[in-house]
Length: 68
Image (cartoon, rainbow, N blue to C red; front, side):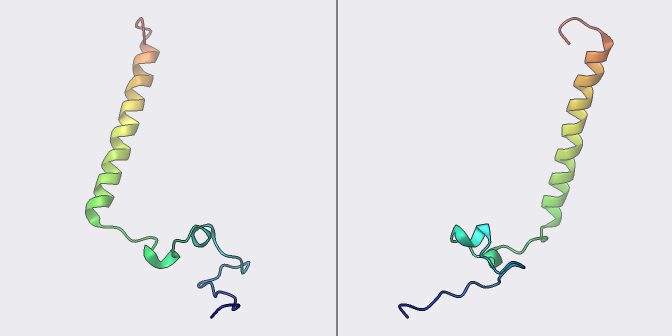
């Protein structure tokens, strides 16, 4: 009804609305901490490949070859 304060649920520890709630997104739209096995494997392989690429660049830079 008009004039009533809107109820924000779930409130955080301070009682203030969260950033997501202030942008109009409900916090329970996505459950944090849940993912599929496929996305977990993709994330792990992405991290391994990324660190390998950075490690390769570092190794080549330490060889002293020109332009590395």
